[in-house]
Image (cartoon, rainbow, N blue to C red; front, side):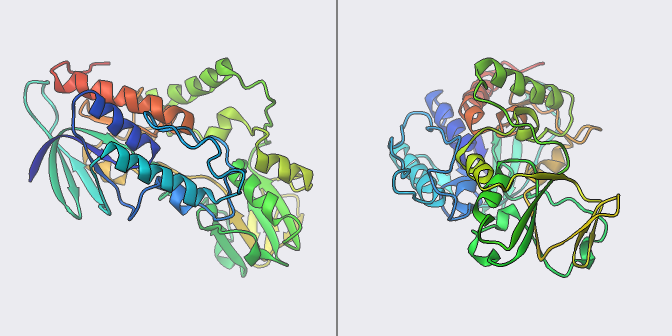
Length: 360
């Protein structure tokens, strides 16, 4: 078993940002990534999600992107962003080991900063004993697929947004899109005029925000998420606290008349869906654009879950385990927050490793 100061799990934006700042603070982190190439979740996005449709891609710390960044040519984000991440890893000579799937992180309870205890990171490529671990595994591998009565009776096709690869295969189909976020808007904007019909269904009433979502409003939204994770509750979805912005895909879907929302149905039938008042709608396909959950199963041996279902986090610090930082979780799950979280996590690691046990 190799002993190491810091292991970073995940090489998406949050993981690479953390590795950058750890390097700045004098550590040589080992980055373990489950994918077979750079790009994090971006490498798995639909090829029809082109750069001119994307909102919220930010420069990684220390290396700026090309200002055009493939937008003028309408290049797929699944090509452009992974290429940028790969170039970033090479230019900074970051030690990313892939493909490596981490199966468990475990360790005895820490008595104090001086006891020398380490977290044991177990993966299919070996084991490492780390003084600190930065977890940046994101959410893409954990698509959230809610259950509704009758789901097994549906004779058509059901898929999650994670499997969506563009509108061509839905030509002439009657499609129901479930979900109130930008992923649903992306699907609706592309299927309108291609599918025989589209129906947009959401559990809550969508909140469209104007252009006044300034810094103060962003801080307020982040504070709402922080409040939940400090209490050990499962983090809310981003759209639940920010609302739907007028992004290119939202504007496109609105222009095509595809965002006339209906409330959530009560059950799924063999040929569609039915509401509590007896109304029904026939469909061939249901697309679940219902978001993702944090991929944290490998942290189960640490027993960090609270009764509310989440992990209690203060900033990026796991309250019950000072050797563990969670980036891309809770308030740092957004692309705008990942870089800031990477720096915070690195600062916390430095404070802990140098003997200043973090107490909240």
